[in-house]
Image (cartoon, rainbow, N blue to C red):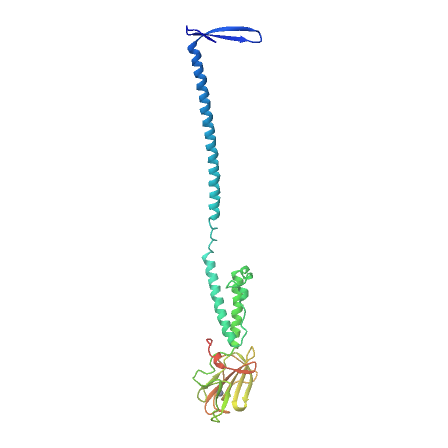
Length: 291
Ligand SMILES: [Zn+2]
């Protein structure tokens, strides 16, 4: 290109293959504008590229942040405690409470029976206190049925265990060693307790059982012996009258004779003994369930 002062530039276009050439007359100002265009377009390309790169990097940053947030959410979700198990229906809870209370009372009764030499009975399989896994498989009806069985056995135990007073009156002599009423200064073993009473007052048996002896029995005078379950026996001495016969079945509270002063006795009173496996035990333990 050659520049002419006239403001017109001559542009020569050479075709190398044909060896020919063309000349164009172009205003010089157009050529310098063309340069400006090129510079402008290049600048625009640079700006656009920069913008695209910037946006792209921004996008990447956002993705990283998104992933971090996602991780935080997962972490928080794991940190939330598991939901509290649904509370059982009130009716079911109530039934369970009753069962536990009944079981607690049965265990108390058991401890009383054990103190009286009875083995007691097991309520373990019912599991009211939650001790037995198998129990959870039982329906309420089955549990109630089991408790009914236990109570039936308990009633039998109560009926056949010497319990309470053969006569409601004050005690005049206790179980154990005492001064011999016939030989002052000497000790003797008193195998029972004596109840105050008048001749003719009723003496009552303290448990269901079978009369195994009636009649004169050494120092006991007129005496009644009754055999109960669990190797228990009760003995009633110094009677003035006997109203039962050997072999007779008696129930708790039934009159077996009348108070007197027969045998080795210094006055009207009832001598009462409880024997377990043939040995006298302290009847005090059998007067009330609270001992
Ligand atoms: Zn006595």
